[in-house]
Length: 267
Image (cartoon, rainbow, N blue to C red; front, side):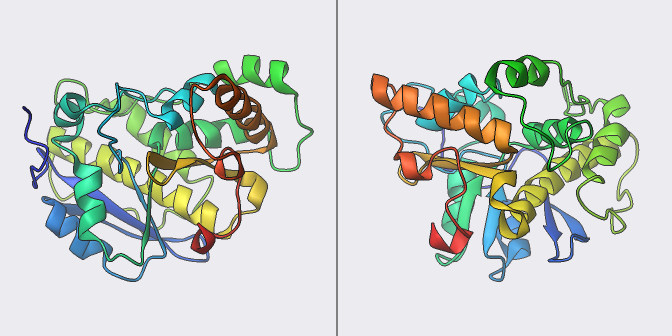
């Protein structure tokens, strides 16, 4: 049986924080889950983690939220104990959530989707006329964000700067960190910083954005993900969530699926 309680990640992870005015306050590299929790501290109202926070014991590899994401053409990896060890070095999201103060709200985020949504919004600014489900899906499938995540232990250097630039559409990156290491290690650190900052963008948008600019999908007992969104994506999430619920495929409460339901403190 894989070790699901491993504390230290196989590489360095990043923690990013964005202030209420949309400024990146800093990115810190960490080498253990305990260090990550200490860096996060007790003050944030919302913590977004790039890893599954809830791993139901009865899951066969796809939780309710992954069923919905699949119908939104948002790739999400299977959630099984073996997969968690392979991808995240163990049940890292769940371990981190347990290390944080109980008063904090901890949810999952999808950095790739954040970059993709921001890229989409370059041509579909807030206030744009909704496209409708069919036209939206066809256009969404054509959006290809830069690839920056490591492959075989090496970062994809050609995707780092474009991904960072796209994040700059949403926040002020003036405090972007200088490299602490060199060569491939610096590139790996920057990829982690992009992931962490994308999660922070999600939290910032959820805390301060209009309710039609982000969506919540999932349930507390089987995992919750929040994603930057727009009215077209929210409408598509609502339609597919309702259909999957009616089919008996998922059991997400409709009032918390696919649409913002108030400030995070009300969750």
